[in-house]
Length: 54
Image (cartoon, rainbow, N blue to C red; front, side, top):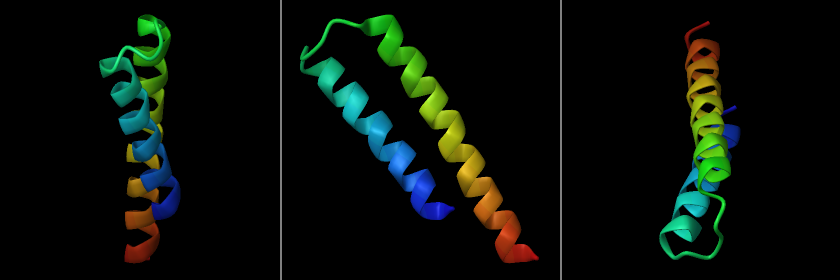
């Protein structure tokens, strides 16, 4: 689960990195996708933490 969280965070970093470099012009789509990937990363990290406690 932790690797999925890191993968989502890497996706967020790449999305906002390309937005900062003006490699695409889909601001709203990028922010929405970045928000969703951030939520997924938090979910995967929380699930991984819960599995370790059990």
